[in-house]
Amino acid sequence: MRILVVEDEHKIANAVKTGLEQENFVVDVAYDGQSGFDLASSEPYDVIVLDRLLPGMEGSLIAKNLRERKVHTPIIMLTAKGQIADRVEGLDSGADDYLVKPFAFEELLARIRALSRRPKQTLSETLIVGDLTLNMQLYEVIRNQTVINLSSKEFSLLEYLMRHSNQILSKNQIINHVWNYEANILPNTIEVYIGYLRNKIDKPFKNSPSLIHTVRGFGYKLGNRE
Amino acid sequence: MRILVVEDEHKIANAVKTGLEQENFVVDVAYDGQSGFDLASSEPYDVIVLDRLLPGMEGSLIAKNLRERKVHTPIIMLTAKGQIADRVEGLDSGADDYLVKPFAFEELLARIRALSRRPKQTLSETLIVGDLTLNMQLYEVIRNQTVINLSSKEFSLLEYLMRHSNQILSKNQIINHVWNYEANILPNTIEVYIGYLRNKIDKPFKNSPSLIHTVRGFGYKLGNRE
DNA sequence: ACGGGGCTTCAGCAAATTTTAAGTTTGAAG
DNA sequence: CTTCAAACTTAAAATTTGCTGAAGCCCCGT
Image (cartoon, rainbow over all chains, first blue to last red; front, side, top):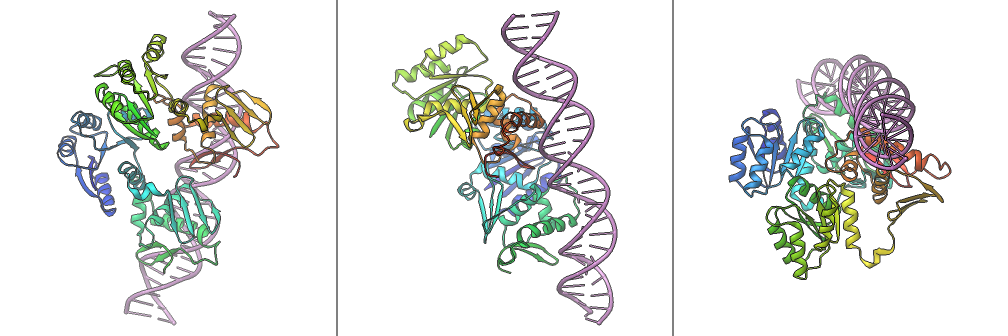
């Protein structure tokens, strides 16, 4: 699965690149419009992530030109904060989806998954680990037949942990995936949130084994086996 | 359920495609008249959504040619704002329904549903959730034997909520489905409309349970069970 | 032109969520 | 057993989100 990222802000470009590589995508990066366009029209990518504001050639122009050349690779357009006008204009130029900066990495991942239709996600919108269940359509978390109420950050964090259950995730990985790239968060925030989650999904279920484990010095792991 | 969308404006075409796919339709898109016609005459679609103003071949011509070839797939014609002449000509050429741009997505969905209706489902154009009833033909909303008067936006919003009852719908989803694709709406507008609806369908019925629920951080949900 | 209804935005309040900060506990290494 | 960084807990501060009344605007019919 090959992905092209066209983004002039190196910080973002590289963060996205490493993040996607962790998910086993093959990622190329172009830092300006022209080289982005050249790559996109010569290499067979599965998805293109395209900043709308670029030196060399505008993102929307790239999209338009690619479509004119009959390159139909799905495009996710990155737009500056919150103008809905942007959204319309973005879709106008042939993009298939858009994402407003600053976005959380998991958000981008979700869009990429949607566009590339990975059977993984199409089949079930539900993550299951042991007796814990997370439904992404209903935003519903259930353990042992009890519905658990989570705030949206708690939900995102749990989703990330469940998607990578039985893996050790460092605080940094968590910050990079669950928080947006502008976020400037103390590692302690993660500790606090892990605490919140434990209070809600582990403590009330004393006859089930805990699911959230601390791996001192490395990070956290969600799963059954210790 | 297969749908063909023939529309040269990528913005609209893609928005419609993704929207319909979310509703579990299988969607093909043609961006010009000729390829639209080719697809329509070779593939077995259940509904064709056809722009009237197209490069390559006029929408109405496509419709006429299809009918001459004995292709009877229902056609919904998209016309530029409000010419009645257009509408007549459109229906003339064999279209089964027409829709004036810019339309709200739910509007298109309703037409598609109407045209593709199987005898089974013909039963009612009425949505029912608890003691709340919405009749789409009469534009009538009734709760507990009391008729409720709604403006057209209120009606569309309620219809969307009822169609997806017990699902959480984000403000963005609501904007994309209930407002037309040119709309430039603040999220606050949704909040205001939810307020209007609550005043009309929840507050006056204090002995029934409320139907509209806020799910902080995620969106709104209409339904009985909390 | 006028008035009314419907649609949208604005501004301010209340409440929930998110983040920080500070003190406490834990656990591995020596 | 001590020590010290890492992790945990708790509460308060900062920020965000949602609700509401009021005001402006636009369109329509008179």
